Length: 250
Ligand SMILES: Nc1ncnc2c1ncn2[C@@H]1O[C@H](COP(=O)(O)OP(=O)(O)OP(=O)(O)O)[C@@H](O)[C@H]1O
Image (cartoon, rainbow, N blue to C red; front, side):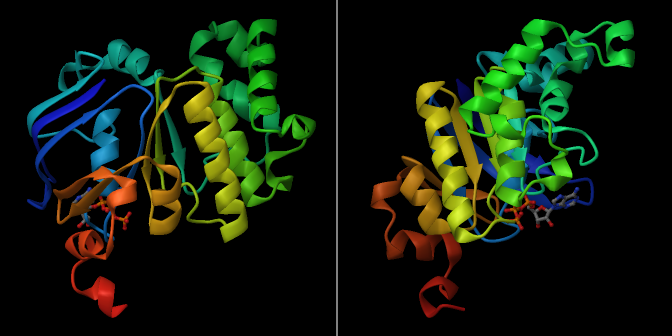
């Protein structure tokens, strides 16, 4: 469903962040992308929803050439791709349910969006999504009253309410304690399995990533140096991805 062929990304300042990326991600896969800071993980996943443009090669998502998308077509395309961030990206002064409903604003007419009049079907969808991540009871709390883990679950609900085919998760557990991180990973796994949504996860906590994702992609200096089962990632592979520093614990 996602196919990178010979993809390169060079930033405007001349920095080459991705080199010759060749990858195929299938429907419903759960993939952890690991690598040192600056390796190119965020750049890689952000090319998929065209938050970042590629410079050469081809990137197809469900047969669509991402580089050709603009305007309305791009906005429509992005509806199929959810995104979760380290900092949750909720509107703090809004209620939980309104944060989830905000994802439907593009579907409203100007009158509905100005007055915040969401049709019942969207409200039901939002409530169902909140229930799926066990946070329905907080639906009418203000987002800033929630803990970090709860905020991330609301962000997940906002994403799944849109019925995406793919979720790009850019370090979703980086601001959370280890117990809460695990909880968020459990929800990601549940969504992956029950909703058959492909998940591409950037993560620094290697053990957590390898435990939950079946497949691991290791990036070093913008190059894919490992692509295979998470279960086969051993210290040699980690040295390949992280360099000598890994085994020396630097
Ligand atoms: N807009 C930009 N202009 C120039 N260089 C950039 C830009 N964005 C990122 N880079 C550089 O590209 C490289 C890859 O960045 P990227 O954010 O993809 O890495 P990452 O693996 O996600 O890192 P981290 O784990 O720290 O988030 C880095 O060296 C970064 O400094």
